[in-house]
Length: 397
Image (cartoon, rainbow, N blue to C red; front, side, top):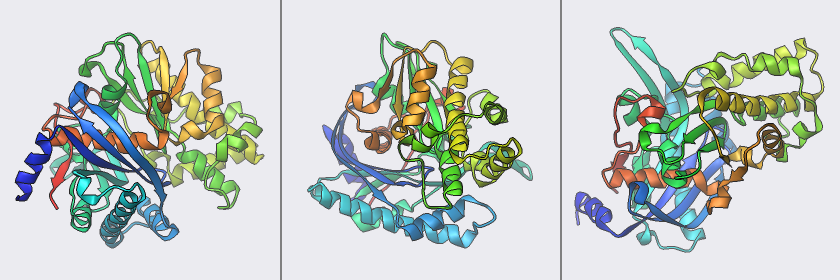
């Protein structure tokens, strides 16, 4: 069976066994899920067979962080790390298959998001040309070669080609998973960056609203690394934030960031809330006399929550319940502050049968399934694209 015939065979199956792979902006690790998917669109059904997160080796994580900053990133580093991450992803996929005791021959498709190293949602002009851009690395051709499995990857660029920002990429997945006839829901993800998908009750796809609300864990993690001199990577269970007090003056300054009030569609990343921004935050905190480390972490954590709630008030309609996911769902300070500031129920993905670690790789699997079935999987109302398109490049083994 030649590769094209094999892809057609996989498409024709009653259900497809898909491995989803996700590495987010926090670079905590690679989350993997093995899921059986049938149907497509609102008729999608899924069954999660297994999931796991594999941490990056320190030497790889350090190299990835170098790529985030134009002053330390070079074309040769990007070039080699694209292929090195392809090798690493292949390794953890094969390890995962072994860990959950399934046969490689049982896997139909691998869906890989890759590692975003730069995202420019606003057009940049070069001569007479102008374009938005985004770059995810972790070469899918290497994954296909090492595993012998069909790979679907590099989802964001197709939406950008259609005039969108290439994000938020999970809006379509949230529509499939959480749309309700009688409840308006805010699906709030708090990863490195925080983003929301708003699903008005009974909505059609053209009524879905999704955008980045601002920083999630990214600034918190950077501040924790700064105050602990690298001994801690993040605020474990939100303990530092819970032991501190929010400084109103610093919070007001943080909320003055122009991205927060920018009208959707909008997306962001390390380009706005990375290392340079953190330096500004530290300088401002010192200027305002915020010296106690726990107070600084508490205020930065409150910024994540306040920017989310501002977005709800300003850009969303009525919200009947919030469904919270991402690494921020493990931060007790974030969850406590959110529940204290809003009157509607706050639920978790696990309340809907989706483990927190599995949500984003599950999303990749669903997006890949849509691409395989030839069904558009972007949300123009969220990304700003001019039309619905099929995101994802298919690479046969």
